[in-house]
Image 1 (cartoon, rainbow over the protein chains, first blue to last red):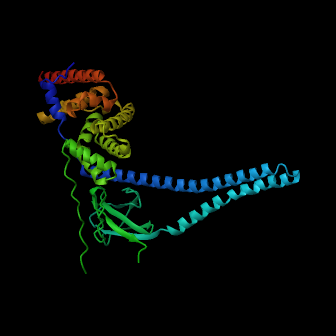
Image 2 (tube, each protein chain N blue to C red; image 1 turned 60 degrees about the vertical axis):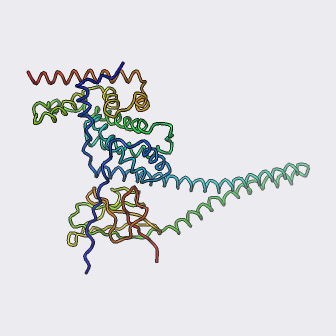
Amino acid sequence: MHDETDETITRITAALRQPPAVDPTHKARVLVAVAAERERAREARMRAARWWRLAGSMGVTAAAVVALMVWRQKVVDSGRSATRANAQTVAASAPASASTAKPAPSATRHLAASDAAGVAPLPVQLVLRAPAAHRVSVVGDFNGWDAHATTLERDPASGLWSGTVALLPGRHVYAFIVDDSIWMRDPRMPQSRDADFGRPGSVLLVGQP
Amino acid sequence: MSRPPALQLIRPTAEASPVGGSAERSLLVRAAQEGDVRAFAGLVDMYYARCLRFALHMLNDRSDAEEAVQDTFVRVYRALPSYVEQESFEPWLFRILANRCRSAGSRERRRAEFVEFGEVPDRPSEHRHDDAIAWREEIAIALAALPAEQREAFLLRHVEDLSYEDMSIATGAGVSALKMRVKRACDALRSWLTEERHARRD
């Protein structure tokens, strides 16, 4: 069997090969969606890493408890030649050793508390002057680069768009999306050198003196 | 008082050339696998137009096609760590895209069950304004009338220039089955378009 490329098929193929009209805003949305996916994957990795750290610390505790129980069992075994009353005393102490596993949850609470204490978010107001815009949103590492997550509100008198976001202390990269089509950095803030997907962003330092 | 800076318009990146060089593509794929986001953006630039063209011909609806393309690139990004360079990138990409188009096509068919008779699209002959445009419309209708698997095979072979081996990777079908699909698609298109032209002349 062979490809049938007569004149009709050649003409059809030529018409179908014409490049389609490309909407550049859609292409930008594709990159935003990919950036959001990357952020989701990063968060999932961080959650998994936290879980493994926690599981690891609990595993160490559990291993210590098991080792203690084995050691106590050896003590019990070696004490079988002793009196029945002595054996009962050792057996009665076993539940007490199991309670040594209790520090694990309290350690978890401590870990969570220290995490919570270290990452209290701070309110930050983002402002853009764009009197002619119909819609302005913010994308950044803090909202998963989701163009629909943080929409700014317009002040009709001044033409300023503003919104407040709660940001963890540290360095953040963000940008504005104007009318769902124009990706622009915040002109009043320093430009990020690690522009995501080739798009410019601005750097914001939160909690810095 | 200093005037606030005006909106800084970001010029969209230059349109992708239909086919990038294989060396450039390999470099981009490898860099993207290592987490270089600019390299991934380069791959999007390189393949966006081709993917959109394929999805438009498969789905015949721009918003469905754009959604399928966006979903494809997100899935490619997600699956990139598992991509092995011995595989050819294009059939791997088109496999994901073809799957998305099939899913979107199934949704479209379910929707079409509720279309009333009065909403059947007009024939292009009623709006003939230019021969080239009319010809493209005729092709679009003839293509849409093909069974999805024939349409997919025809587009991959004759429009996207994939070899039958690569088409086999992209579709999961065997080479001889694909050759048969392409042949039947060619026969149906030729027959439809020749009859259509004759009908219009008469």
